[in-house]
Length: 444
Ligand code: LLP
Image (cartoon, rainbow, N blue to C red; front, side):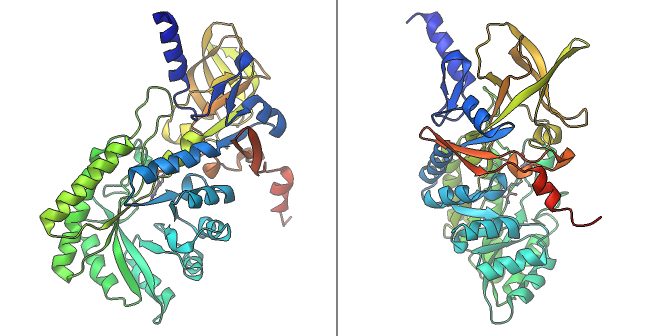
């Protein structure tokens, strides 16, 4: 092969580097995921539609299991949850992190063992707590001082519940201010610096029906560097040692949360999971040895890195407007099915699918159909210059925090979600219809 052909191939592979591993090119510009043509999915289920590659989700679960053989890997349900997802995650040997009665109830009624579930939340409602106790959730992560007595009362004098304590370790990490949770000055957890973490420990130990199994932290989300995790772990072990010294209690568990970053566009960095596993293990062994502590059982809580790269969102172009030197390509979805660009300034790499275009590239802004100018899905992207109404655009890395964050804005209805694998497509979640929306209207 000539060098030119090789570099063309490399460029082609790089272009698909953030797509599910099963993605293949079809003749005439099409793409298939899990052996299913995305254009066919669009025809059969209409657009916008989310497509989720079951094989990619399972492979990502297995990558975590292999990288962290001695740890509990808890999938963070907030990234995306459905009954099928619950089954895949359970079958691949992961646990689950939930943050509401809704996520918990869905998981348990789909057959997920409650004792492998951890419940989070900075403001757990009475229903969250009642559901957790009724279903026998494995651990409840205490996130504020007032929760201790409230939880103890809900458990009752004869009852028993395993709990963890969420700590703010004072480490800043995360792709955007709105998803940084490792330092003081945000709503989650108990601070190490002002002593509220240290103060909460004896109060929990003083409640006989609560069993403190360990500490938890989640320093932020979309983190692509291993270092903040290592620093946070060192501080967490430091606190475990102080708890042993002050109260004579050796905590057997340490949950380091999730936040593992992924690439949304070709060339962007992702967190190196093998390096993370190696460095966390090394730091845990060293810090525990230095403090004279036994090594606690480690847990991690990835959400995005399990589901994100397995999903693709497919839209149809409704209008193309060339104005003031700009090209606006308007699609049939937008901020109601993906609020992430508007919320965090995330950039995506949409791609024309379903037809071949020989036209030269143009720089376009892909916008949604919602009634505000901030409804931008992807600014400054290259699309074929002849992009036109009726075309299909596919956006990779749409498996996490898309459907789970979708809203009812403008009453357009949330898109369906279709699982693909082995050459077949099956509907997991149907499109939200006007009837669904109308059925909530009970007054005049
Ligand atoms: N554990 C806890 C306690 C969390 O709060 C979160 C995410 C995770 C685990 C999972 O984090 P992940 O591995 O998925 O990054 N809506 C934002 C992300 C918010 C994350 C909130 N907590 C986004 O679309 O980027």
